[in-house]
Image 1 (cartoon, rainbow, N blue to C red):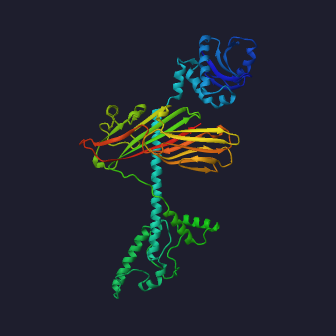
Image 2: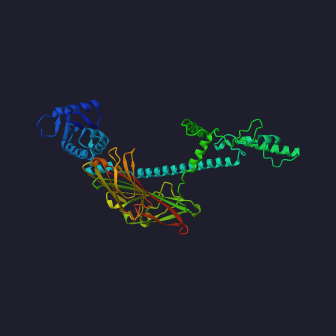
Image 3: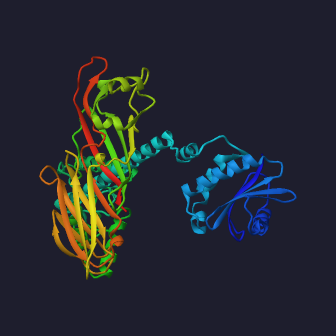
Length: 542
């Protein structure tokens, strides 16, 4: 059997999709498919047509045809078997209309390639093909999670560096103000410009140099001091620093600090220019005060105190739920990484405590971890010959299900149309025993009118720009495992979807915690710190 091409076309012979398995030009395929409807005729009951050189094997798909173009020497029974398999696969990935076929063309071509290879039918079933198409690579998933962790670490590092630089700049500005213009700020600090002009008249008596505390009436001592200062100034110039001198020819400006140097001060000059044009400030000093106030308002990032062994556990939750409450899918991904801050500890092993829910998850250990020991005792230990834990994580887990019992929180949205408006009732129910923080439930508003809030637990906010109601519950614990909200606004029931939910927690759904950490050489326990985060990737009610 040799299949020349597999195609989907309209009743008029317009080609929507075609996969060629032999050398055929586009014009030839389009010509064969255009001639196909004219050859069918009326009242024909069989599903193949033969011409002088080829055979059409076809099957109607509502307003479309799925067609196999084969040579006349092919086995007609195998042709029909292949056609029926393709006809079963098409509705799995697309509807029977032109737009949807074109939209999902690549997925359909992939399925055609799984059924037919080099013109010959593969021995596969419908379930096998669906499994092949949806198969996921653990290596790819591991790479993606490692890249995500690296990006997050880089963002945290960049954020901390930026705050440190701003803090250092602020401290330097404060030191400059306290000194009253008696010390110079080097150009390398990003502020540029010199200070000390106000000391010129006093220092004329000391040959242009200042702070000569050991000066006396002995000319030799003065010369020695001046020579030492000259050497210091030369070394400062070699390092790119400005010497702490005041020139007699330069009159005192009377200002302790001048904005506008050669490096980072350009940023302040640009800000000053914009603020002057907008008539927000009139003086450069006002810009300095504004920048200082902004720096002082930078919030400090809370940090977790780290022991000699620090363990980070991160988990993400994704779910799609139908508007009637049916759970369509749940996808939970997590990872664990170990950071050794005290290298004197040597090798360590981590004992995990896993609850009942962990049995629903699939765990994958890093290649450098003893997989057999983890499977038997839930202990993470490096293989012999491996010196240190990898930075990208040592354990990952995943669970794909549709069981609602595993969800940390369930949200129901019930729009009830009325005479003049629609009443929307929402309720949440927390199904877990740990705390949920920063819970946000976002409901779209189909009109430009602000909704009338009848009742709510927690807090709420109406975003007029985004046209949505944001229901906020800062903390869900044992005191408020259930809550509700009701508002009224015009709109049909489907226009209040999708509802989007966000939350965070310091506990994983996988119910896996770190029990203890032991030093391998001595088998003694050691102190450790953990940082556990559960976040939401996507949680929608459609």
